[in-house]
Length: 377
Image (cartoon, rainbow, N blue to C red; front, side, top):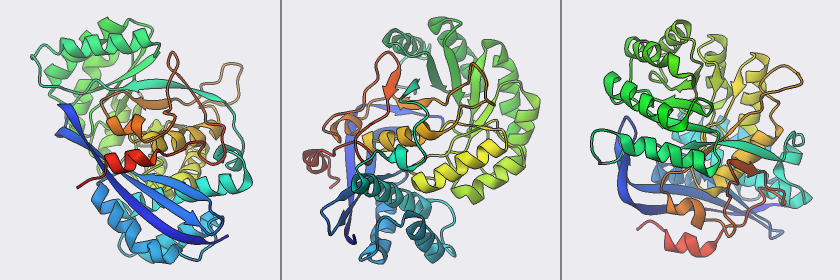
């Protein structure tokens, strides 16, 4: 079997109302999908996290390297592309582009052998994942932030047992909002907070100490990803687990985080950190350091499917016991028309539980009409 064609799709959808994390306002959402065809008629799909036009340029640049290659040699092709661009792209958009290619190759491999990707990754340890609801971004509303409490309560009513709140809007604002959300969801629902690296270590530590009594599941990206010493300082100062890694790339980047003991929870993004091939290695390495691995997920149904296959094979996040702690799926609940439209059968939750796809490859089918409808101009 040989690769005959590599295509990229830049997709775009407008939002009905803008939302914000700590770093920017957004009124649109984009996606960049990778399609790889073979001479046997098997097609694989992947997705790249990051700036869509930039990741598309990366994939288009290396497409000729893939033509005529055997798509089943996933590790070989990963190393070929990484080595070819090592001098210019050990991190960032180059690795994000490589991630989409790698996911598409695994989709082809699973379809070729007629099995789901998770079987080729070592076999599923679970057939479904507990999902936590990611949402609770800021909107242009009154300053009371009570709409966030209502949104969080809505997720709990849907059956979610964990939610994640965006913070990073100033200490007083964050503290007040966390209190409102905790009161709205009650004491038994897990509550995580994500600052999207809005603070330095001084402010992050102060915020952490002010919210520790709210039983926070983890404090995500408290400081910029480059500030490993800051991560260590925050981790040492707080009882709240510290999470990060969505802005890190490959096992080489995560090695530094693990060796320096900067994290409690590693969050590689399958569509950014190097694809399924690399994220499985990162997760295995996290296990050797006794760290939990809960991948970051922010994309279309392709990204969700790839993450489910990875999560299916990860060990529980504790040493063997009668009550192991299994990893969770990040399940984006914000407005994103592409997420549902891109698949003929969207991946949904039932009372906060999401099944692992069982079809061959990623176990999904892309709706080509959506590729046309959401094509960026």
